Length: 120
Figure 1 (cartoon, rainbow, N blue to C red):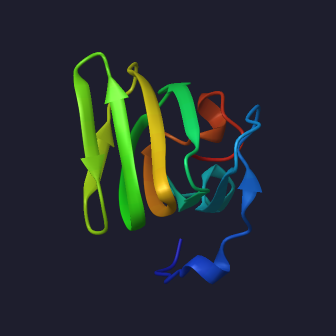
Figure 2: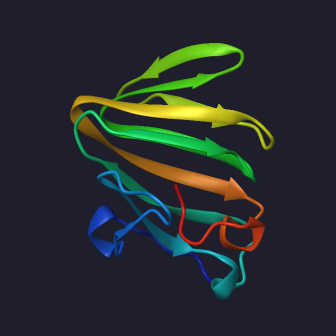
């Protein structure tokens, strides 16, 4: 695999599988590209909720807007520049605030091979 640079405009955003919410993900690198991780961008509309059991180790970087991520351990709020780590096996609720949010994510192993179809 060669060195590559990506931007949000490179991502083909698709609704997260099984979700009705205004939440989209766009994988840029995944198992189809030969790398060991999945990377991509996520977009959350205003006041959206995603509840999920984390099937992979998931790291999310907030680029725009604000999110709250709740688990059995409590709730963290994240804004631009903040990084949220969600270990495999945790059940989380991700809530976007009134302005929505744009994120970048890295998962290990690949999201799609762990039972998901797209990304977060």
